[in-house]
Image 1: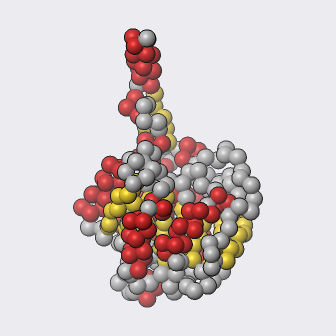
Image 2 (image 1 turned 90 degrees about the horizontal axis):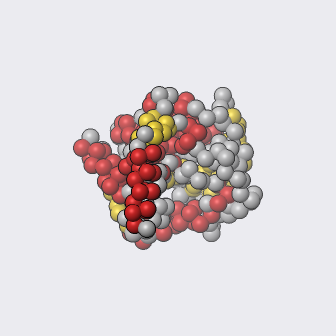
Image 3 (image 1 turned 180 degrees about the vertical axis):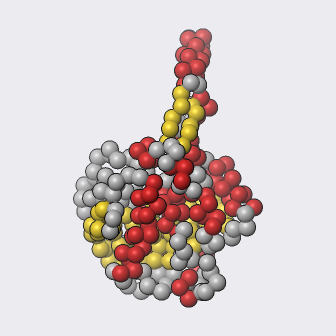
Length: 288
């Protein structure tokens, strides 16, 4: 039995050793996932929900939800992971509201909730800034604090969102610092040593790490020590690189698995401290 199992593992390893996977837009986005039931997102206590489909000029339709805290004008924009559906984020948004007290804006990726923006690197780079433009015109974003939160794959989308300025800080939870790293972390652990990854030439223009570094804003990195999707060692490397490049970055490790940071008291405290330290970028001439 042991010999048979060893032979099987060896055979699989040899087979996979010749395997190369190219990471492109279709592999990063799970566009074929079934739609969840409508109307599941509910507002945290004291918040008001505004759920709508908006048209972003030159891009397409975007499903976006705003959770409004009438007591503040500060805003945090949540960028979810590859499996993110706005309709399924009630618990996570309740925790984010508890940590920040801010208005929250969140949105669906292509193929979900009515979002139909075609997949391309250019569109990935353009969606965040276009959403910000819409939110300003709608009166959702004013002259108060503005933060971006990126969970997992959403870290890359948050980095694209902040690159044109105007943000007071960036929070990234459980995300590798580049597109290839994201792809590596989504491979099952048993096959990682045997599969070679390469990034599609079109996607190589998406410079995740560079956008974070060049934004010149405070960054908070959150990692869970039992995370088997985006391992803490990758988050540590992210932190080390940003620190080396002169970024104002903090790194918090807490127990739990992938996506568990917001339920950890130490992470909640770190977020509360992080968002309370800066002045609004709109009124701080030297912040960018």
